[in-house]
Image (cartoon, rainbow, N blue to C red; front, side, top):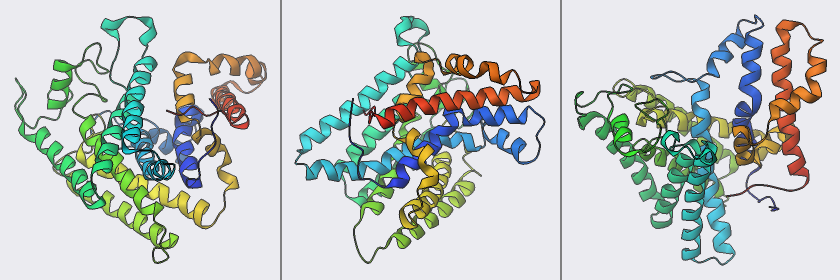
Length: 370
């Protein structure tokens, strides 16, 4: 459907596009480069574009929470616009709940709903977590002032920590944070139908969605800061607050890691603090360059991706074969390249085809919104 772009900060669409770039082909290109024998930075970056198996943190582990954080940042702007357009609280509540449930549905579609193999269908999903965490965070924002939103955020993280460490799992006891021994996996096995991603545990399962609400809330608190129009709170002061908070969150997460491991699969409270800290630092950089210095030309490729993130995410589930299209147009040329370099050129062709698809939608002003 056709929509007009919003008046929100330029840095948000660019950062969202930067985030999705790694899914849309960036990680694939890095992996292909690493296989050609590059060392040093490329080798390090290749490690960073892979998920940590369990405890620990790599750059790729923040792609998902960064997207959720940005979705949170945009909500205060959206809420202000809806209220300015005369929407009632009831209409806004309806939008929030509908958006959350539609994302849950799209996540199940992404996982293969239309194969109709319900016994082996994975019901938990990335889009589902985004939908539910954003929805509950938005409901909190609708019913609490900023102080209480912060209290809710902290209380959720502390309560989740207590749940992980104090509630015993049959056969394992309390505080066991392994793939099969945690309370998170146990709840998934008891309550989630269909297939779990790791067999005995799902990274986007039921219980671990609770701390993701705090990820979205931290984004919304950041959005409150950015939308303030006050001469005493200049853009440079907002930048300083965001960057400073980002550093503090990372330091706190490292301390918390001593007693509660940073773990994406469990979405531990320390993981929330880590990813929120880095999200704030990335947003600070984009905000500085694009919204304070007004240097925007370099980010246009990211903006094109960032305006249609759900489109590219769903398309890559198999709805559109970018691999086949890239091979059709560029396969002949790629065969002339040295064999060791062909995987990189194939990955680049894949990204180019994906980006050109999004650019076509951008030029036609077609944006998939939920």
